[in-house]
Length: 370
Image (cartoon, rainbow, N blue to C red; front, side, top):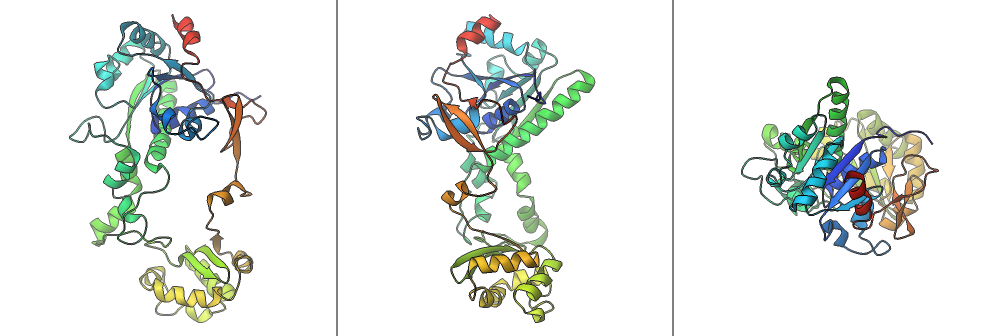
């Protein structure tokens, strides 16, 4: 078994829900020991549902490979225990409401005084200060506040994305910031405080629609399966359903016209000669493309598109994804049973990482740090 990148590192995660648990799970997969601090009632994500062998799908997905320690961080003895653990930790992750850790005596200055080498990561909704700092910030609320919903779904019918995209992107960003801080610490020996907010991360992802408004005076809206800036791009009718195609550059456009549509005349057509013009005339373009596509099945078109080097794909349902040849999975241990989740990582011969029961490691950790 090969050593993992973060073997030997201790991470303390005062966390709940999605963004911070995703960050700490990624650290655990990289070899770090992660101690998850939970309230007596547990991380509220434990109670979303009971779909995976009696446990919540969200909690199982986000918490394998961690140790669960139940603490009442407002009680003196438990607060003292947490500080003893932090004094030996490498990373401290928290996503309590801004100001909460300061009131508990666990703000960065307090933690840095205990352990000058610690990397602290604070994950929030809107940052640690400002008029929005105390606003509750669940994933769908951030999707709405950042304008993501306005450019998702059908035209002028705002819709949220069907996955927790704000939480996930923020968890990934926090993971990257922590790794950067650990790398810097290896050079100068000192810790630091990194702060990541859901709003700033998703606002970064919204830069193109925002630029279209600020510099082009255009209010982009949802486009369904189409794209606001690229054409042809979307789902097109065939003889037996829809196929998804994407043409990203002029070479692919030429290949589509010559080798698939057998319409070289379209290449320099005044309505379609450049991507920006095609986007303005995408309804007319759809007619031209579907005149050809509707004569063939999806399988036949897939062969044509592949030969021409034009990107295409299926519009899959969830059952299709489980049978997808490219799907990579891993097993996690839940209530003495294996559950299959996507994303295989690490040593394939290792036993499945276990999803901890509430407080499963409390006694062991109390003895270790007592």
